[in-house]
Length: 199
Length: 224
Length: 184
Image (tube, rainbow over all chains, first blue to last red; front, top):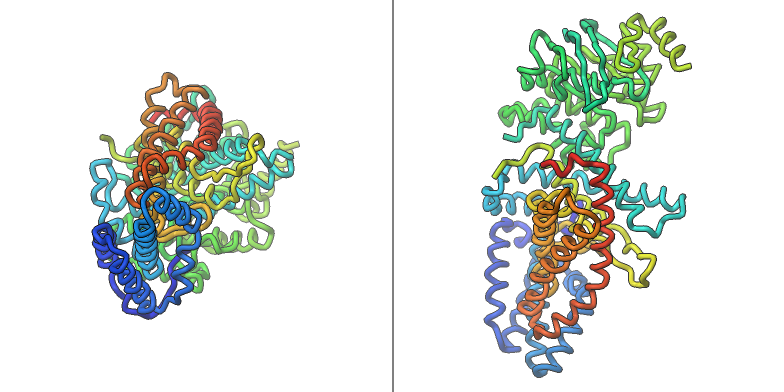
């Protein structure tokens, strides 16, 4: 399955997804009670230690932060201007720590295992008429349909380019939605033809 | 055996089937007709996906209106576009889907999935994501996912329309070799010619019902 | 509350996949403004306007779950828990709420609404509800001062207003062609 998972033989990878999620929740809450630069620095080092334990190079860790660079700069500048340097360092380090820890969970857990774990956690949606079976069917269907829809989007853009209306968002969306809704009718039939019973 | 008794079907004001009486007992039946002739609706009537506005459809004596669930277990349905029929991301999960709906024990599911993948030459692609398969392989997967349920009859709704010549021939061979009864709705005349009996539909009525030779000739004549 | 039919499940999965597919697109350049706009929030608005509160919200819950699970479905190929726990995570969590609010409003429009009323629904849900989670998150997680977070986000409002307009036009056009959709 497509995903951000990087396979290694490591104790971090071997830990069940549920444990990793629980650990992340505890750490993410705990981080807000750490206010000094020194303990935060230590926590960041420990976090990089976990990356090493998972056999992930420091570069992979840096890659997680790169897309956030602009917003981190804004954050740092805002804090430095409105508060003081120390607060600016603490706030920025805290965000980096949160992002790195959660990226570590994502990088070391297969999407399929994560989905199973999330499904279990989400018994909460039961009052909405969603049960675990339906949720897992919908998630699987979505994963199956993403490449189908991506191809469809490319196909429609190609057709619109041929007609010279490439820059119009409406010329993409209307045929995309109409085709998708027609697919929905057949997909519903296909599920029921193979004995799927929503009750 | 599938019987249609004075079947009429309407979508709103538009009547698409105007009185169909048929008894389908042959091993290979083909239904041909132009776009809008009502053949897709007819196909969907055969496994109870649609119930007729008037008249009755009986599958081995079961009325599709009353026993929809039992009928669907007896009649498999293969759609034109495998992309709207394959519902799970990987090959083996998709083949297992219908078996899970039957709530079969896990080891029986594994055994039947193995056999179906073997039968359609997909064993090597077992854990593949479905979207990486070729068009022909996707159609084979769609067929495997239906036949793994061991239906007594299989309805194919234009199974070769989206395929190239090589894959069209491969799918035609697969259909020819099926032990199950097959009803093929198509305007692929090569595929239709392999049936024992060919029914020509036009504007919601049966206009020819014969051996392939004369029936196809009647169809071609009608198309102008 | 009624349970979900097979068709409902399919609609939710399809719209979650549409939001993902729109994120895989290079940003759509809109003809009349120079700023390229990512198409993903368009998907949020369309899901709400076409599927209604419950199914639209659920479609976006599916999308967020898959992002959490580590699929790189956000524009630019991002995904995973890092996005949610980062400073802009609130906007992602605002997607299901936004679709729900748009759907709730759209369901209450007479005869399914016209372009103008659908635009208002898309703007209220797609901007109001999404920012209602996104901005406080910037403040709490990012530690930004409130005014700063608010003004920074305002820069994206013009683009989002245009998206609301596009979504309203598309939803109205599709509803004319698919009247059965609103009948749920």
